Image 1 (cartoon, rainbow, N blue to C red):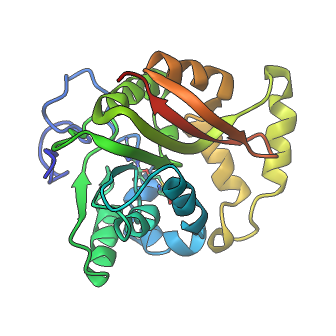
Image 2: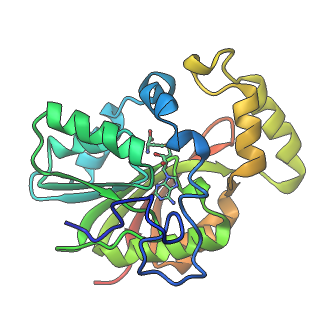
Image 3: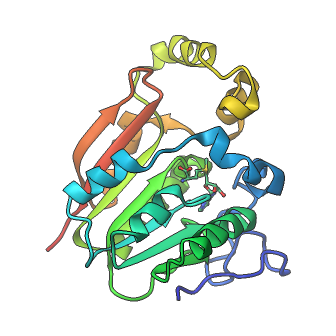
Length: 252
Ligand SMILES: C[S@@+](CC[C@H](N)C(=O)[O-])C[C@H]1O[C@@H](n2cnc3c(N)ncnc32)[C@H](O)[C@@H]1O
């Protein structure tokens, strides 16, 4: 099993595995306090309403199958990881939040999945072990890192993938020009959920914008290329708030 810090109450800097440099970002401190709150986590699936069917079919179309391995970074309660484990050889679900991982472990036990490993670590501290991964997946988690650290994380992801391995990534990446930011964001906020258990409310989205690290597609795409990826597909949401990427690790 991958090397990772198992007890987040240990005296070392919160969020650090102990092996990364002292100047590395404290991932736990940047995890988003709600993700560390067991009450929020218990209600997460109802709030997020993630259906993995289309993503799984897409990944299968890219070759995900019984011989494949997939690492899900920032897996949360594991909706995609649990679905992927039913069709592929090895799934490693990585998350910095102990309550998220506990929920994921319970679900994996209920489904009697023996090929799914849960690892307590982050983008900057997960150490992949075993054969290089065929796929890395991440959804709505990388925005917890500032851009400098996003780039470092992308390079680490490239290193855990085999050559021509696939990174599938969705997050909040604004596909607009700087002069359009106010209008794009205000339109997005207008569509926020009325109640927290129906989705993300306006105050929650505002907190995200203030305290987390959404970035621009035109910045992020440079980071992907610089980290050693070819972008095979980039899909921008109509709201211009979200983007989904399929990237191939360079090299042979
Ligand atoms: C909004 S949830 C998304 C969960 C899941 N991927 C999904 O699509 O439902 C963000 C997840 O990222 C995790 N997270 C935050 N910072 C992280 C980091 N530095 N490394 C790994 N996971 C992180 C949180 O604990 C949380 O589970």
